[in-house]
Length: 289
Image (cartoon, rainbow, N blue to C red; front, side, top):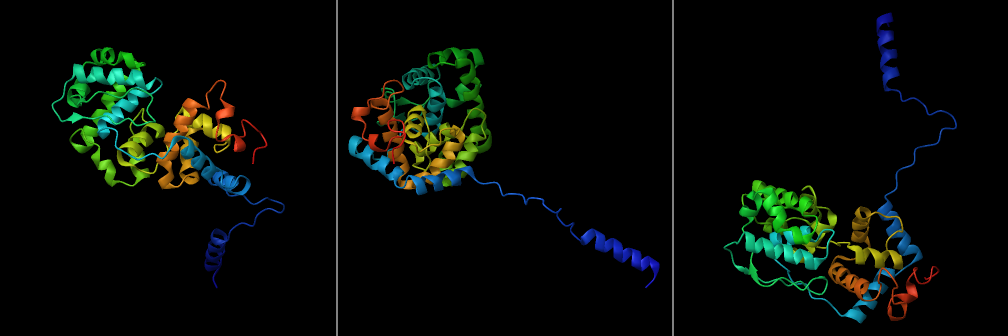
């Protein structure tokens, strides 16, 4: 073998041979999925907690039958208006959109259901979404001012409507009903200002998709009982609850958790004596099973 061939063979060996780990070096640990870890923790240390919560809330507040609340675009705009404000204020702002930018479509019936915190919208035609998208920004801001944070929400509404029109040629979101739930949520959350909560509300209440919106009442009750980790972010919790609840449980659990948060598990001075979850609530008893 020639010296040139020997050097080439040595070079090939050097580049293909993996270096040996240093003596005493610790192997890298695979990063654990915190969502999976918590779901497994609940199953191991607090078995049946999710079913206990669901059954006791259903016994207290009754079963809930799914019903579409509004046309999906109206639902999305109304939900954006509810961000960081009371539902009843969002209703006023939405009604003002109807009056300022009257549309010509069919009359909508609002079916808010028991999870809604306002009085419900009166029957009416959806606003002219093209007029809303193209309105002068200060004019639109003044129209929706009763809903709160109008300076933020006005450009958010227009950007949302623009995105829908540019991608689909009209102001309809019915195409979301043909998508898998997580893909539909990803599409919505790609719009600036729309997070997992807003997207999940739309998809759950307009299409019955198995998603679990977490509002302040749901967060408070589930943290206190112990279904949600104490330090979990809401973004993490939206993923976690997809593993905690079964798809056919999500709508009823979501609605009844909201009811419980409003009627019993108040932020201040919760009514422990009236609570059907007390026996397994870690807020009431830190050692609850």
